[in-house]
Image 1 (cartoon, rainbow, N blue to C red):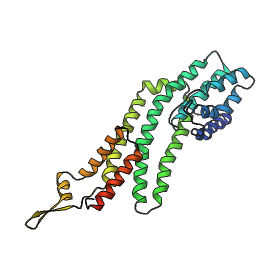
Image 2 (cartoon, helix red, strand yellow):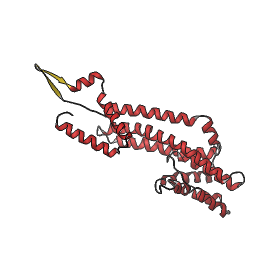
Image 3 (tube, helix red, strand yellow):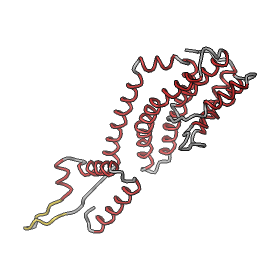
Image 4 (tube, rainbow, N blue to C red):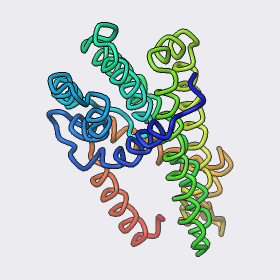
Length: 273
């Protein structure tokens, strides 16, 4: 792997990092992130293909093709593309246009799965749990920590992957897939995400039934106590599985939220909740 970068390479890597922040600026259903992908590489292509207008135009058109990946993990694709385009500019016979496109396409799928699992199911849940726990106590540090943990890790990983992709070049494909690291990271992120969701449900979701039923002879039955004796957190768990079942039936999240709100208001009116 490349460890020493020239000032020119450092400048181009910074271009990739900052320009990649526009991935959602031109997102569309035809090319997804394709146009921004070309925007990230634009100054690099102008530089490496200087003096060869035909290859430069070909490279610009090639990099506007369909691209869809997790915005942070896409840093690896950008770094690899930079290395391959530079190699093609120096020796067009050694790297074909199809090779550059195929490598980018083969990377974006697995990287999207890894990035979405890692950030949406793991890091976002962890940072959100920390932030919500503090914010619920009126501590403004909750917002700061959420942005710092989630946003900071997102940007840091993207920068590392850009340099890694450029440093490894075409070897990144062989090393990533043959080592099994892609499957390992994906499974680990999913497991961690599920653990954090379960912990957050137990900590942040509260369903209480203050309903008390008279049993005659002055005896009363406290409904909440019965559920707690069966299993603490049973109502919270039931609510979670109920929401999951509705979402699997293609209910929109806003509809589920509205249903919970209606149930809470009606249940509160009749003294159930």
